[in-house]
Image (cartoon, rainbow, N blue to C red; front, side, top):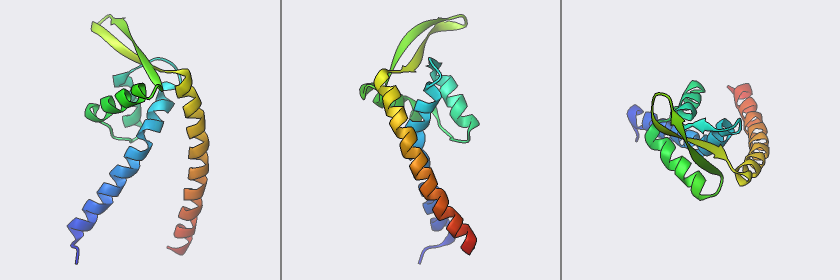
Length: 121
């Protein structure tokens, strides 16, 4: 039989997996407004309570670039070394449109199930 700590760990693991599952989508959403610096992506995600650390963000950015969804350019900085700014490619914009449709459908389905749960509890 599991103790309370094991159950909490399982819930935390599920919560982590849920966040991981939507992070790439959220990164693409943050980038849709134009070129963005990686720390600004981190700030935006943290402001939306999608806790992300640099060690999580950079591999995701690299994978998105490898998949042709984003590109980057180096820009001079007034406060130090040049900075890498990311932007969506045309394929990234197309993918984001598809993901928006998927999210809308998924959100409707999950919210419907959630309402049924709340009605019974």
